[in-house]
Image (spheres, rainbow, N blue to C red):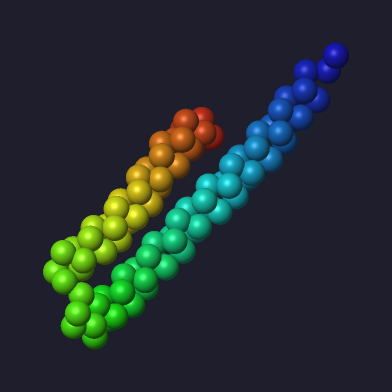
Length: 95
């Protein structure tokens, strides 16, 4: 068994695995960035709609704003889960 071939195969496999993980990470973070942009746009639209509708009570406005904020917090939490999940791989491939 020739060890140089094994090492070459391992290096090639590691490079492919690293690229694959980078693609997955980029896809997930870009998806979250897009989600945040949609949430921001939705919030602006909702605020404009609420400002133009005089019959909505303050309690209703507060409930809508709380809902939007909860969605934003969950998206931020998801980003932190993804970052933490990929951290060991980044540490491994940076060595």
